[in-house]
Image 1 (cartoon, rainbow, N blue to C red):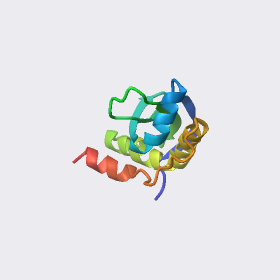
Image 2: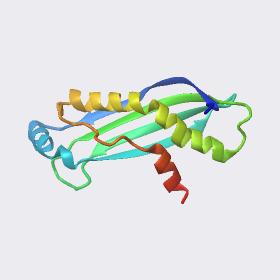
Image 3: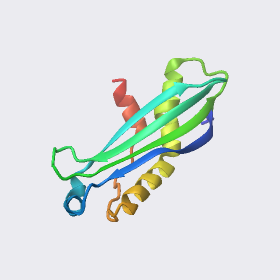
Length: 140
């Protein structure tokens, strides 16, 4: 498959780890396996067929426990789409699927480093995110 875009740059735009105290840290360490990952993807046209894509991972407790930590990363990717790409649907697929599959290894590594450096060494994501499937589900 010929790529219809080129990644010009990718970087960590924002990163956050919040654990307010040692009691929370110890509680979260025992309960982090119950945390869930949320993904949000936004994009903004820049100029000259360039698009800024922000992929946000939030990892947190869905239950309203008093003791909880919050982890978040915003990963920015700047792409340029080929001139022949005109349809909004094609651009959506590039932004929500193709680029995500390409940047995922770097994004996952950065996010796991954040978690590990925050003291949660045992956290790993067993399942890789299937952006192709998420994209299809979104439009069905």
